[in-house]
Image (cartoon, rainbow, N blue to C red; front, side, top):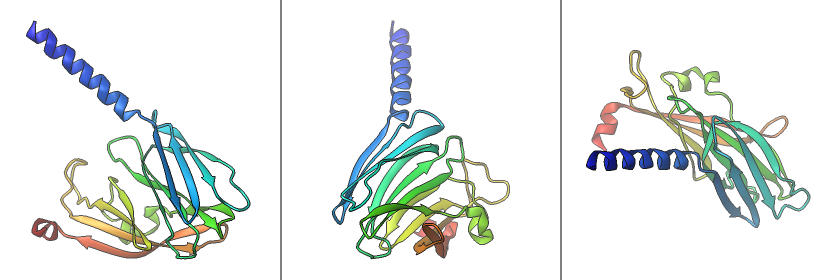
Length: 196
């Protein structure tokens, strides 16, 4: 009987964890009189992200788009200090690499939303060296910080040994929207990390 009870308990825990992993993401964020209701289905490797703005002067249309991965966090900020907020939604791809991504929109003079583009990490050799995913994102003051472990040749996906890299991006105007431009690269060696 105890063995059956243990098996039943293990099955329940497995089922509960699979439901937790498949839970929709929903959060409402507000800054400078503009709110954003963010919803993502988070049901598989390809999902639907919906951002519903409120308070914009001209266009409050809901944005719906397909994303690769699941939404893990959303953040609102005024990264360029122009008095209009940006919404940043952080995603993680399916699979062992857990590659991170950002879906972002800037409120232009509080009137409408324009996409924010994050260039592929592979476009910068220095930033990309040793990269194998496991990204974390957050706004630090007026910059977007991206942090990930550094992999050395021969490292397994579960055991990076090269330390940590933190990239800082600034929001700049682009041709058809906004661009997160790489501003600074900071590397932390394994020795640096051991000291903390």
